[in-house]
Amino acid sequence: MRADVEPEPVARPQLVEWDDAHGGAALARWPMAAQDTGSRARAQGRSGRPGREQSGMLVMVVERFPPGGAAAVYGRLEAEGRLAPDRLRYVDSWVRADLRGCFQLMECDDPLLLQEWVARWGELADFEIVPVTRSADTRALMGRLRAGERPPA
Image (cartoon, rainbow, N blue to C red; front, side):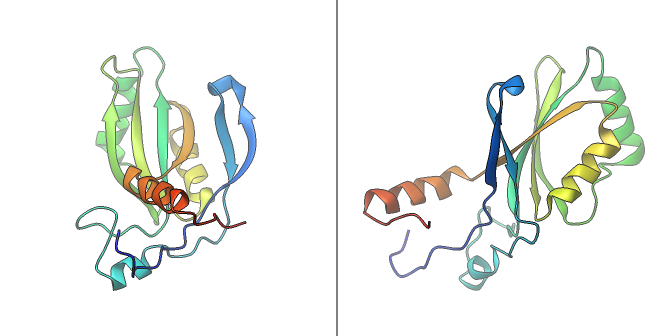
């Protein structure tokens, strides 16, 4: 990371509680009006992924299908599309080898959009939504912290 580049502000969730029923995943509350975290990166010609501009919080959506449920999920996807509201952006996904679920990386600036999307699919799968960061961003943060920079209060 160049020393003359100021770090970007990032919308951060606030930890609410631990969800022991799902292996200790953190439940989070997000700021309702997240700022455009990608504008400074675009102005400097940077983005988290070549050809893509990140403007919201990244979330890993973990979907769990019931036994045999993949056929219904992919049938609806083929017939109706992803059913994502505007401003909820699909980034990429991976499917479990046993077809019992998938992992979708999504980008969003409003948790209500995630709730709307989950409500459209909720009868076909169970959902866990985990805020994530790109490993390169976390690596840069750890480097700044090791160098003595204090995290924001």
